[in-house]
Structures are given as structure tokens and as C-alpha cells.
Amino acid sequence: MECDASTIVSGFVEKVVSRYAESIDRDNVAPPEFFRDAAGHGVFGLPIPREYGGWGLPFSDFMDALRLIARESPSIAHIIFVHSMSAYFVEKFGSEEAREEILPGAARGERILALAFTEPGAGSDLASIETRAEKRGDTYVLEGEKLFTTNALYADTFIVLARTGPLEARHKALTLFALDKAEGVEVGEPLDLMGFRGTGLARVLLKGVEVPSSRVLGRENEGFKPAVVGLGVGRLPFASIALGIAEGALEEAVRWALERKSFGRPIFENQAVSFPLAEVAAEVEAVKALIRRTAELHDKGENILLHASIAKFLAARLAVKATRIAVQVMGGRGLLTASKVSRLYRDAKAAEIAEGTNEVQLMIIARDLAKRVR
Ligand SMILES: Cc1cc2nc3c(=O)[nH]c(=O)nc-3n(C[C@H](O)[C@H](O)[C@H](O)COP(=O)(O)OP(=O)(O)OC[C@H]3O[C@@H](n4cnc5c(N)ncnc54)[C@H](O)[C@@H]3O)c2cc1C
Image 1 (cartoon, rainbow, N blue to C red):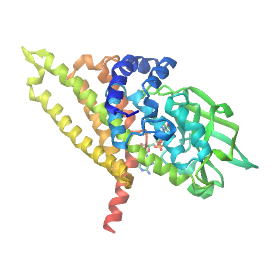
Image 2: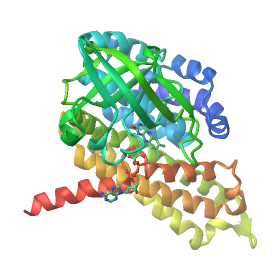
Image 3: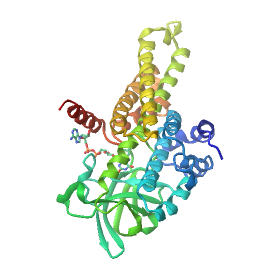
């Protein structure tokens, strides 16, 4: 069946996202009905290749899909993004056996995926991961704790980065695994964050979890590079989510500013109100063009790591700016915790931290700057 991405996504946004956006944020959980309805629209298989039952969307179309979903619910966009990025790890680095086992269910939304890299002692510095995987015959036994795992509450399969050698070997002794929850993965209580609420964020405990060696993604001790490259490419879809936050806030604020009257005329007629909105609109267009161009380069097989970092940095910063201005334009209404712009404001702040902090993006950009001049 041909996939018209915009038809799938507009139907999903209208029928599902609009229905669950507020309650997922308020209750800090996405109910089973949400997963059933979302799976019914095929959104868990958007970028998964057709041979595994997905839609095989080009990266550029996937960017548009996430942006449109995030305009209404960054949390829902993030659930789908993390699931899809986890599937990307299986597709790129998994054995054929692992792909056949995991991807068709993932594409149908019957098997939700999560990515558990971060630990209490290892966030920006992934090479300091301490979770251990010890080889015993044809299996590995995993022991450790992961923190801030999106989708942890909902996931059936976890992509885990673990240490298969000494701590001093840093990034040279890390291996990627795909673990099934049924193998004994324990999930903690949902974390109560200010933003991206309801994304199933929790601690993940691995207490002697046994996994067959067919579930190693890539090679033993060579997991760091694929992990960093996968996360690096994933910064572009994450930038699309941040851009969606900015667009959603802008639209809400402009609508309000045209309707709301003070001193006998719509507040939009004051340049103090319309100019900051116009500035955001201009920056939204610039970041959208950057994301589109970078996605097209990825579709042509080019290395986009630098530009994905630039896009993530700019989009997250713009999301914070756009939502701050939107709350200001909406006055007291904007401050109501149930207002859409206050929800987007909280999500925007989280966007500067998740998927590599903005400082980490600047480190990557600065490293490239030095390389070009040296
Ligand atoms: C909503 C959300 C969802 C997430 N989902 C996942 C997930 O699904 N899977 C997963 O594995 N992780 C996930 N994370 C974790 C996320 O990747 C980490 O929070 C992030 O990498 C930062 O790590 P940290 O929180 O340990 O902060 P730290 O690394 O401790 O950093 C703290 C501060 O110090 C700054 N800093 C650190 N080192 C430097 C440096 N060298 N130079 C300048 N500044 C520096 C950082 O920028 C930051 O401001 C998620 C986080 C959030 C907020």
C-alpha cells in the first residue's frame, strides 16, 4: 500500500493526538487505549522499512510527521520518535534474526521499543557507562541501572548500551544489546518531570538479565560508535519535535493576539506584541529549511552529524523563545497550567536537555570549527 505521510499524520493528529494531548501531560501516563488507537493509524511504523511491515518513509517525510504531531503534543511525538530511533538501531546493527523478531511487531505498534543508555553516573559522557554485560557461553548476563529511559513504562524491548570490558577502557569496551522485557527487565515508577510528561520515562533495573548473543547489535566492544552515530542522527528528528513546539506556540499566540482586545483594539495591533511573534515566525522558517535540507542529505546517504547538532541546538533554543513569548502574549491565560502554551513551555525546556544537551551540541559544533581552521 502506498503511504501518503501527510494523510496518515493529519488523520492521526485530528483523531488521536488532539484527544490524548492534555490527559497524557496531566496524568503523566499514556493509557493503553492511546497505544491501540495510535497503532491503528500505523504511526509506529513510519520510518521502518517496508520489508519489515513499516511504511518506509524517507527521513524528510518523517521529519514533517514529527513536527506536525509535536505542534499538538510533543510527548506523543517523543514516544513515536524514541520507538522509531530504537527500531533504527535494530535495523542497522541487528542480526537478521533480531530484525525478524523485533521489527514487524514494532511496525504494527504491538512491540514498543525504548533506548536505555543514560545512567545515574553517565549522561552527557556515555563512555563512563557502568552497566556490565558478562559473557557466559552463548549468553550475556546484564547487571546495572539505567535512568531517564523514555517509553520504559510501555516498552517490550530495550536497546541497552553495556560494558563488556574494564571501566578504564571507556568507549572501547561497550556493546549494544536488544533486551526483551520478558527476560527480566525491571522498570521503576514513572519520573515526574516538568516536560515531556507521559512519555513513560523511568529507571530501568537489570538484575542478572540473561540475553542470547544473537541479540548483540553489531559487535562486542564496538557499540559506542553506532550508539553515538545513532543518537547523532536522531538529533534531527528531535529538532523537528522542538520546531513543532515553536510552531504550535506561535499559532496559539497569534490566534489569541488577533482576538484579544485591550484599549479598544486587538493586542496584535501593538508592535510590542506582533514583532516578537514575527521574529519567531522568521526563525521557524529558517530552522525548517535547515531541517529539510539536512534530512534530504541523509536520504542521499550523506553524513549529517554536524548539521543535526546545529539543527537540534537552534530548534530547542527557538522552542524556548517561542513558548516564552507565547505565554507572555497570552497574559494570565498563558500561565494557567492547563493552557496549551504553558504545556509547550515546559516541553521546550526539556528539549534543551533531552537527546544531548544544548551544551553538548555546542561542543560538537566547536570541535568542527577547530577542525576546519587547523
Ligand atoms: C525528557 C528526557 C528524555 C530522555 N530520554 C532518554 C532516553 O530515552 N534514553 C536515554 O538513554 N536517555 C534519555 N534521557 C537522558 C538524556 O540523554 C540526558 O539527560 C542528557 O544526555 C544529559 O545527561 P545528564 O542529565 O546526566 O546531565 P549531565 O551530563 O550531568 O550534564 C549536566 C549539565 O552539565 C552540562 N555539561 C556536561 N558536560 C559538559 C561539558 N563537557 N561542557 C559543558 N557542559 C557540560 C550539560 O550540558 C548539562 O547542562 C532523557 C532526558 C530527558 C530530559
